Length: 132
Image (cartoon, rainbow, N blue to C red):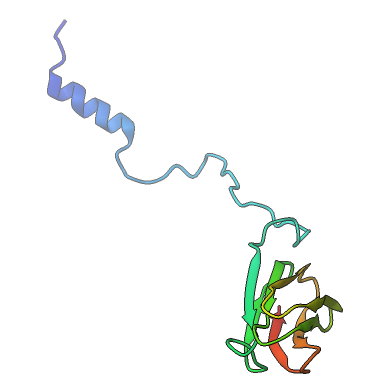
């Protein structure tokens, strides 16, 4: 009986592997997609923090985009006087806030639309939140 030469063994091994470079499509595929959650407020969205200083970075032309379902905190300060801040559409207020003291309004942006945050002392719109 003759011994097989190493070159013959190598050629036989390569031909058995297929060597065509094609992918085997007969094996079942695995679905790696993550199903969408039915609760958009289930902690999947990053918190949004908006800082507003009256007279510095406030005004009716300031618009902040917020994703629907996001947890939002708006920090407000009026360095020029006592104030009270109100977020329309959500009917949230800081109550009376002394001059130079920062107050906050925190909520979940669960309503789509445009919402004005205003000073109750001056009546000025400080920022418009655009929730979509």
